[in-house]
Amino acid sequence: MKPTRRQVLGGLAASTALLALPARAVGMTPLTAQVADMQLLPEEYGRTKIWGYGGTMPGPEIRVAQGSRVQRRLINELPQATSIHWHGIRINNAMDGVSGLTQSAVEPGADFNYDFIAPDSGTYWYHAHNRSFEQVARGLYGALIVEEPSPPDVDAEDVLTLDDWLIDPATGQLDSNFEAPHDRSHAGRNGNFIATNGVSGLTKSARQNERRRLRIINAANARLFQLRLEGLEGWVVALDGMPLSKPEKFGESLVLGPAQRADVFVDVTAETGSSAYLLAILNGEALPQVRYNVTGQATKARRDMPNPLPGNSHQMVALDEATPLALNMEGGAMGGLRAATLNGKRMNFRQLVQEGQFWAFNGAIGMMENPPLAKLSRGENVRLKIRNDTAFPHAMHLHGMHFHEVMDDGRLGPLRDTTLLFGDETREIAFVADNPGQWLLHCHMLSHAASGMMTRIEVA
Ligand code: C2O
Ligand code: CU
Image 1 (spheres, rainbow, N blue to C red):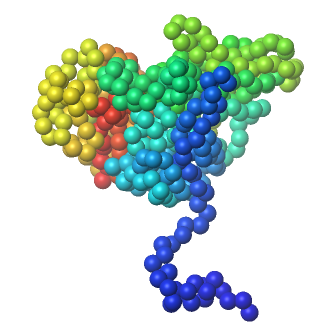
Image 2 (cartoon, rainbow, N blue to C red; image 1 turned 90 degrees about the vertical axis):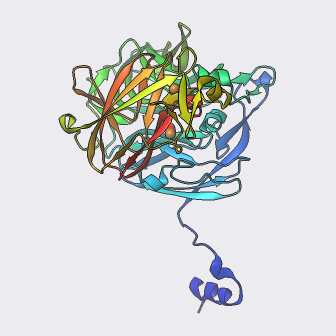
Image 3 (cartoon, rainbow, N blue to C red; image 1 turned 30 degrees about the horizontal axis):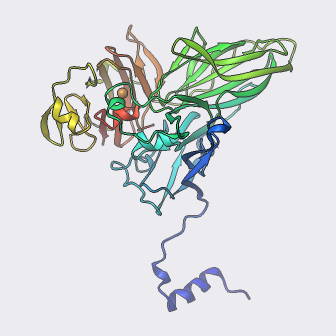
């Protein structure tokens, strides 16, 4: 009889030091963060060096059914420590992937097992969360799709990851000044080469009258994408993965801040032989972000207006019982910030600039050096008034929980995980603090997060 594996290992262990071997997690698909190169730019520029999961940019799409378990072993083959954040997932805190808060960064050559449940359907993404301002700019991100229990009535689906790259035209390589003070103190690192899924001028074919689901992800470090449709009639059915209770007609344009997502159902109205477009408005000019060549007709007539996607179950926020919190965002160029507390020391703006810091939340800078913005009890209702007292837009992201934007008339707006505030704007968000742990709240303009716009919320 063949000896069992246990007997073999047991025999070995007796004679060697194998007992010290750590338990090997089975079923862990590797996700290797590595240096690679790709043909990002037109041929004549040659290949561009990137950092990517599995050596690709975007990284491999992760697609699971709602409620299922996601297991990935991050293997770090980069020259820098890293970690992965699963953006928008109401996750177990230990798996949130925030270096220095929920785990220590995974050193080069080391690995880390991520293992979590994806409770909500929707369009999410994963990205590096150590030196994000550099690592995300180098290409460390991918789409994370959680499918509805029954698929919606569409003919096709396109996952569209939008990004801009800051390229040195002399070398065709990424601009390596990831900590440029000008980017930090102004609108963040904005690129000069725009792509979708790593392809500039992405082109697909479509048929007239078909309905497509666009899952649009803004993976840029800082750029706001203002999107428009041409030859397509659209409805926004979800924002940041969370279904709208009623699909909303795609208006004149839709703005996505960094990290925000939109699920848009589009009906192809353009004629056979012509093209339809997802356009991005850049410096006042509408440029094709994605082009659909219409190669035939799917059906004679179009479908009726789409039904809402099935909702994810969230606890209702009780606004009248909610604990009021306030967050004042200050700083940046033309911001008039005079002083703030950094590492427990009061510093004037000149001193802060010398430390590479330009922004503050409630007069303080730093994720760990300061007390959390709030210590909440589990299940506590919260309303947080965020005041953008700066000259720049910011995309504020809360980890671990979804929030409602509170509308001007006091009603609860859509559920989101990232809210965009323009300069001088105030927005109230409301949520039930039902996920225990330490949760980051930061600007997703990654240069801003690295230069003062980061705090945390503690849920007991
Ligand atoms: Cu998508 Cu803390 O980030
Ligand atoms: Cu910002």
